[in-house]
Amino acid sequence: MSTSNHGSELVPVKFSRLARRGILLGLSLVQLVTLAIGILVFVGALYAGDGVLLAYTAPIWVLSVALTWIPVSGRPRVEWLPVACWWMWRTTIGQLIYRRHIVTPRPVGTLALTGDMARLREYTDPDTGAAIIHDPHAQTLTVVCEVSHPAFILLDPAEQERRVTSWDRVLATVCRSGRISTLQILERTLSDSGTGLAQWWASHGTHDASWASTTYTELIERAGPAGERHSTTISLALDMKAASRQVHTAGGGVKGAAAVLRQEMTTLTAALRTADLVSTGWLTSGQIAVILSSAYDPAIAVTLERHGEIGQSLATAGPVAVNETWTQIRTDSAYHATL
Image 1 (cartoon, rainbow, N blue to C red):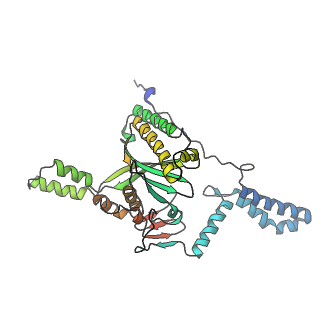
Image 2: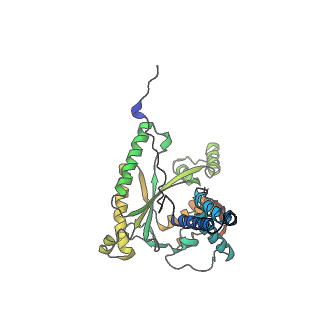
Image 3: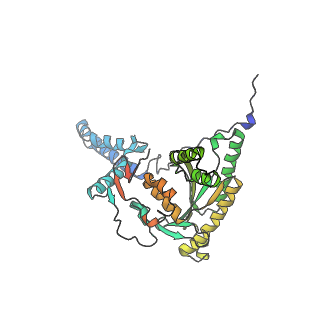
């Protein structure tokens, strides 16, 4: 006899395909221009001459049709042309290699990042101590908090369903104001430095120089850095344009926007608490600097975690060297690629 508990089964969730809004027949402006060129050439050759002229112009209208409809990696070929041209231009002017001038001081409040991220600015919230990242071009303010939670896959189906529903309420609560531009959940797998294990042994262990104590100490020193741990962070970005009225009421500028963002931070913290997610606090500039340094140079992540007094400056958190190719980017000791 077999029974099934339908009340504890997870409800399958299917995400819809990304919406693509085209001007006509789902085609973008670039696709329409390319297709129009092919149609004009085809019709002109058809009316201006016989089949010979149509054959002569075949490479043009066949190429336009291929560029319009044949995709490459999920994107029409014509939309790859600006990417390829920009890549060739950057290759020509030598922008694929970056070396940081270590002895050159950085301007106050800037981040030592490359490319478009060099425009980011740092602002420390005086009330919460959180590091706020200001993007002057996108007009956004971003803060990051670290969240601890149990392993989702180890929970029973009923608890999983309850947590999924609770997270749905968190998203609904945060997005209710309409002032949030981005809510990012980032899950990272990091090399465990063994600091937590060593601290536990230092406070709870018996250090009597016995054989067992010595062996256990050596085991912790060797096994700790060989482990792995997971870190979950949530980034909250305020759209300063959407919240322009509230920002102006709060005093205007970055300081006024930070006051508005503080309200959203309080809302997110309360919503996470109702979803049984523990927020360990908003990250400071030093903690964000360690995260950035670890992302660009994973080989130094364990050292930064064990020695908290180093690597705490955003002015030096960027990569020392960057080598970019068509398929990947190398930053210090890391290789990055996008699927």
